[in-house]
Amino acid sequence: MTPANSKLSVDDALKTLKDYSCLQIKIVDFEADKHKLRQAIQIVSSLCETENIGICADNFQEGFTTLKSYLKALELCENVEKLTTAPKQTPVYIKFNTDTMSYYVDHYTGSYRGVLISCQSDNHNLVGTYGHFPLNLFE
Image (cartoon, rainbow, N blue to C red; front, side):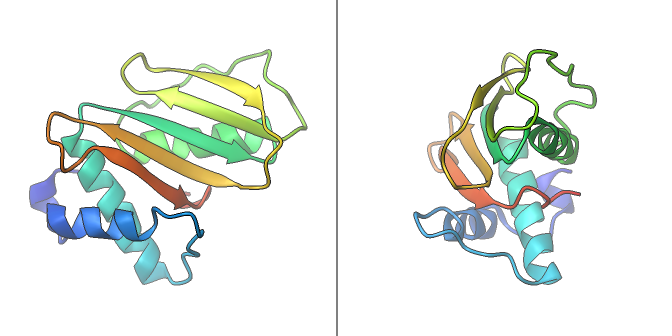
């Protein structure tokens, strides 16, 4: 998706992402809100050089499914190799780096579940960590 095909301006996309970027988790209640949030993430991601995607999930399978859905939606990667040493049934943190196209997995003891996206760009207006986003936003 290119910014020209979007109904949101870059400024509107950034405002939408910043609305979800706070210490208090904002719930995405309505399908229209989900659509706007998806669009905003896709616009900002398309303008960034690299992103780090952090996922906190109940288990590796849920986290890996989330990672694949975000990468596909952001047109970053279709196939991600699944680690065989990942924890199976315990909460996990997955960090994916779009520059190296690799990730690591660690145990996670916190109660938060969701996705954070940290954007790096030469355009300082785009730089930032955005989220908390739902695990199933792009499913």
